[in-house]
Image 1 (cartoon, rainbow, N blue to C red):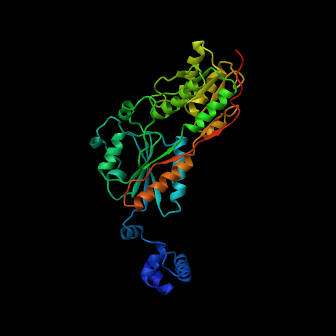
Image 2: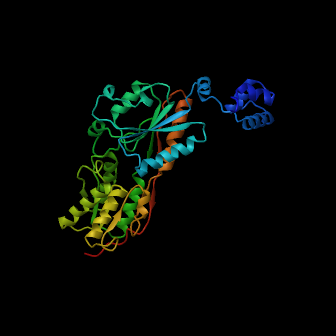
Length: 358
């Protein structure tokens, strides 16, 4: 059996002190480059593996970040993209990422939430990136634990605050939160659509969910701007069942209504895909008969025939921004960080075109 190699063995072979080896292991700056290279070569040759627990005790850090995905399936492609950005960034900072899934009742009192151990037990992780669909009671519980966290804010639901806000007001940007701007790119998309001559445009999405409500508000704003009657299918339940099924059922209702329709704007790509599926089943062509538009640009958006015109959300960049913000917060001993807002991009594909003449 290979003998256990210690930091003393490395120091002796490299002809330096134990403190110098420790500084090399911790990437401290005050080490001569030639000495640093010699120590690293000895570490490699001996196969020395540092004691992670000891290092963490010395540094007073677990070097661990938890990606906390709440009230969502892990394989949701949107949040998978965010997690990928988090992992890619933290991989270059000596921090590991542990994934934690957590489902909770949004109406439960904060003190009654049965939190996952990584959150309720101090010292397992340095901080948390809170993603998925979240509510004020979880953040209140985390605040009571003095847990360092940042929030992905576009899917944060605060119905009490929304009820107190005027109908045309957007929510205030929270500290310690990363957002993407889901308004400007949608305005560009609708401006282009209306410029093609469309006047019978429907929106499909559950406006009880804040992310669909924000897109519905932009849709209404653009319809009013161009003196077009807004038409919406906004039955609840889009966040509790398959988005494609929701889009298919919403489109069936639009067609059954007998009202004119030249374009359907899905609250996300899944709803748009369901609309595309329903139209094909009804013998309607896309975009010859009806244009279909989505939002998010998940991978499946390019699988329809024709591929879906949509808005690309920079999920990878959202993850990177969350990781950067959390590390900065930890560096500043938990000081609140200003919100970050990232842009989104209109992606033009084949699912839109001029309206069919009525």
